[in-house]
Image 1 (tube, rainbow, N blue to C red):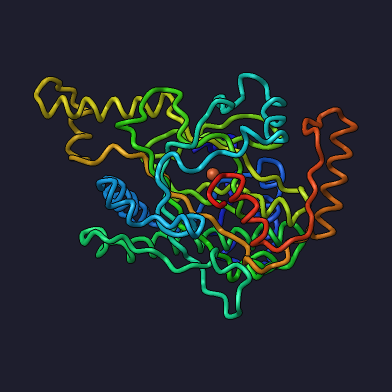
Image 2: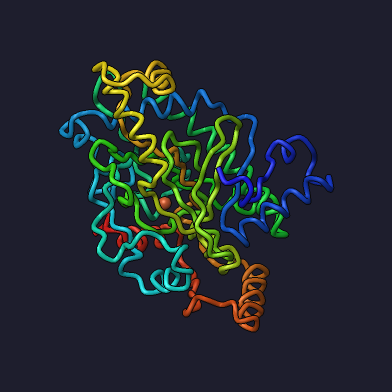
Length: 397
Ligand SMILES: [Fe+2]
């Protein structure tokens, strides 16, 4: 993980003292400032268990290693793929045909730009959406965004599925909700401003899967340059590198590297947070690609196969083989999307929108403004915003 470049926010500190404590106030301000400056931060949370993440990654590798007809049983296109599986080559990154997004890329130094998405077809990644939200106690205007979960049908997967998904999902949900409280305090709002607005959000544990047996060439785009449509996205450690994020107000591409140990998570701002803050916090851009480090890991796996055939004998690789026998070569992302409630009225909070305007004016005066078009944050229901975004990325007609 890029510890030197992204601020590290300590959730342990926040949870160990009252919100009146000066140390907590400062940590909350750090969280808010990190989201404003970088659109992302590193979160330290000692409650997170690496064993739970490992069980989750193993389960999802096994799930996506199933034959295609088994996976297809779990597809729900009629629900905009908002539960169950989305198979490869379905979701299109919207940036390639979205002028403001292309302008963001054009504003980056050439060395900091994402892989070229202009000729990019739908992403070759698969995904599973597992709903982690509470059903709203009222009749929602957006029933398709609040549908029941799909449990995979294969017996071996089915019996492991729910406990592992719920356990890891809860760790991620608890962490991101506490961070949302910290961000609210740091932005000068009451602690529960965001968590109340998202109390019945259709939160999703949303692992993606990229088959590195098929997609292993360096510079293959697994998920093209985009921002997330939800409020905050939180990631646990993946077994393979390849996630790049862009810190919004610095224009630098950051390859995300998790340290070998330690209870760290990566949090990125999504479009609902951008909307409710009137653009004070910008949704963070990111991409998932096969980079030189991914290739290195893949190469190690391929050599493992050769070791099994007796043709290679490198000790470190043999050790890896012993520790990871016969695992499918599939890159799983440990991702959770935290949403505001679909029926919540998404309107910029005036005090934050005023700050956003002041910052834009200041940047314009300093000649630092790169975005050509000031986005409009029109009032709408969150569910409407989500449906607009889903149409953009070809998941909803
Ligand atoms: Fe994303």
